[in-house]
Length: 319
Length: 134
Figure 1 (cartoon, one colour):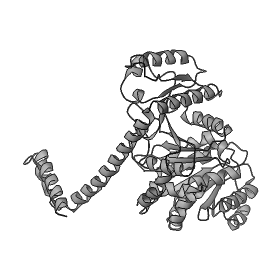
Figure 2: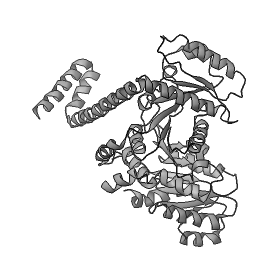
Figure 3: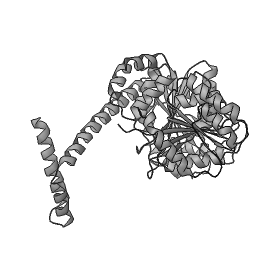
Figure 4: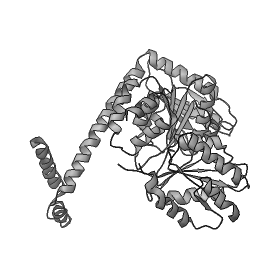
């Protein structure tokens, strides 16, 4: 494993790829791997790219890679697509739009299936970002699955969120709603070559105008792009860099990163507790009889749960 | 440890007939595998590097232009050169029976010609998966 860590730090493609597989597959040495690369993390900037299915996220990412490469920076992409709830399989097709970068050694693209994880990313994404960060990529782009209104976990993983919208998704009431509309730092109106792009931009700006602000508030840029015509991408990158510079200067980025870390630690801890709890439930031979008694209406659910939970806590206090 | 089989489905060469590749991708998804699809007109170098970055267990190549005798072995060579020693490579498309033994000798372990039942592909993957599980 020390070999793998060293090679990841040297930026070796095969080792980076293998390390990400370890994370995805919950390899026995995954935790050790992350602990050893962690001291080398913290240099990369992470952009989340989210938006509804078919809004052009992959095509935008493709253009962002091109411009970033012109500036001689190394780029990594994690592109998440959904796993089938039926077969567990997946078709990961975001790469199709980015294949012209496949032979560029300064670009690393990894497709990831959500594997049942809700929130628009995969459970392995947070640790995969660490691997890519330690491997020396300057910019890490996380492309979420095509999201609806509530898949907002990308906010917890990235320094900055680009929310990609397109004409035809509804009026300004949609833009005022809770959920995904609240997590964008940069609002991208893609497919600007279509009718109504200006209207969408105006509606988003209208919705943003309701946000509470004071003299220190950094306004969210709203940028029109056409990935198909390769228009507006430089403006998008400039606005994003500018926004990033501002949140770095006023300390918001650091607060964000601390919050992200706190969320992540809490998540790891909850996952471990959950695993223990599942083991406890699985070993509980009386469980079936209890369920029967609730089903028959002889007992009520919270009484049972509280008793079981007390028993669980007691067992762990005694250990 | 929850190990998923990952398969790259790639289309080298200049033909744009991707129905077969998409059909296979879809069927393998339904069989429970994670399938990474590259799209059409991929260079051998691009396919090899994608296979490494995606850390796949299998690479399936689809080609209907007739250039399989040149491109398939070249891709095998490049995948090995990039360090993909254990990746299992198979192919499909309009490939004459007489070309198959030579392709197999050059590392393309199975060839599925038009009309092959999808079950044959799944059986091939299942039969060989102990070699790639690590």
